[in-house]
Image (cartoon, rainbow, N blue to C red):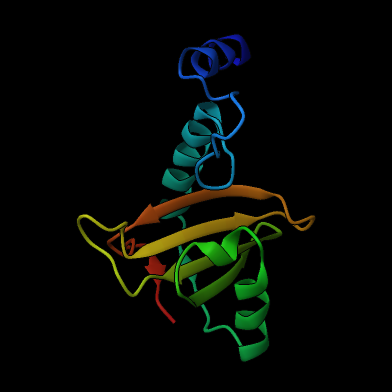
Length: 126
């Protein structure tokens, strides 16, 4: 997979100076991994809670997650990871979907990330 990704980068000239990576610099392999993980997350029964003002402020200050969405609307702890859902004021075509989802490891590494429009049936909104 790494060799294939390197070939794509070379073909698309992604390693040239002055070209900014999209999102938070994920590769095609990361995109596919995140998509697969998010599909699994959507099926889990999760009861979300409303974040406190301090939690909202901390997520807004995060250099990566803070760029996706306008407000943190839900938090949950699942399997030791912090799940975050952020809402966007502007959404729908041609703008991105309404919600941004992140699952973050205790060390701060993003385990999964995805955009979605419809709240999954297995999830219980705060």
